[in-house]
Image (cartoon, rainbow, N blue to C red; front, side):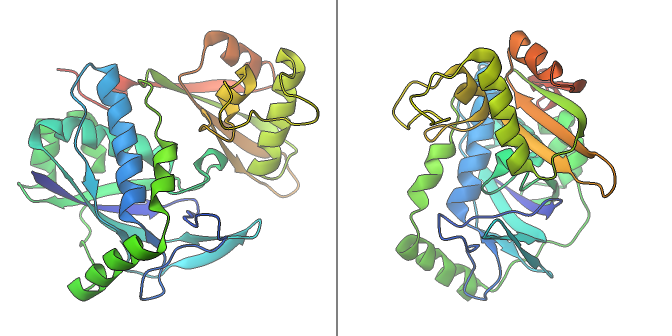
Length: 300
C-alpha cells in the first residue's frame, strides 16, 4: 500500500453540505472535505480511467481533507462555500498508482465537493510526498503523464486527537452514503472544452438557458412544465447531457463574469457525441481543447 500526501488549492469555492446549506466543518470550526467525499470522487475518476484502459478496478482510500491555513467562507445562492488549501492523503496499491495519479489530475478540472457541474471545486492538486519515495520518482515510475502533480510545499494535518474525533463525528452525524450517488460507472473516452461569450452573469442561469436551448432543438420529453427527468426514469437526451435528479451532468459550466463586457464561459463536456458537440457549437461556442484518457494515464 502506498500513501500519497496531497494538497488541493481551490481555484473556485467548494461546498459539502448535504442539503443543510452550510458547509460541513470539523471540530475546530474549519471547513472539511469528508473522507467519503474524497474517496468517492477519486475512486469514481479512477474507475472510469481504468475501464477505458481495460485495467483492474483500483482500490482507493482517502483521508478527511483538512484546511490547515487560512480559509474564506462565501455564500452562493444561500449555501456556504469556502476557498483555501485542503490537505489530504490517498492510499492505494502500488499496481494501481498510475491510474490513481491520473484520477487526481482528472479531478483538477472536474472539481472537488458538490455542485461541480456549476464550476465549483475547480482546483490545483499537488503531491508533496509519498510513503515509498520522492514524489518525482514515484510519478516517473508509475505515471509520467501526471508529473505536473509534484509540489514542494509542507504537508500539514491537525493533531491525531482532532482527526480521531472528526472520524467519529463523520460516522455519527452525516448521511455520507448519499455521496455514492455521484459515481459514474461509464468508461472515460474524452473531455472536450468549449468556450464563448455570454451576457448571462452566473453558471446557474447559464445552465438553465442551455437546457432551454437543447429542449428547443431536441424536444421536451417531460410531462407538463417539468424540465428534468425524475430519479427512477430513463433520462431523456437533454438530461443525459445536463443531468437529472437521479444522475450527474456530463457538462461543467465555468463562467467568468466581467464588468461592462460579456462574460467568458467554458463548457467542459465528458464523453460527448459528435451531434451533441455540433449543437453546442451552434450556440456560439468554440472548441479549444480535447483531452483523451492518454492525457491522464501513461499507456505503456
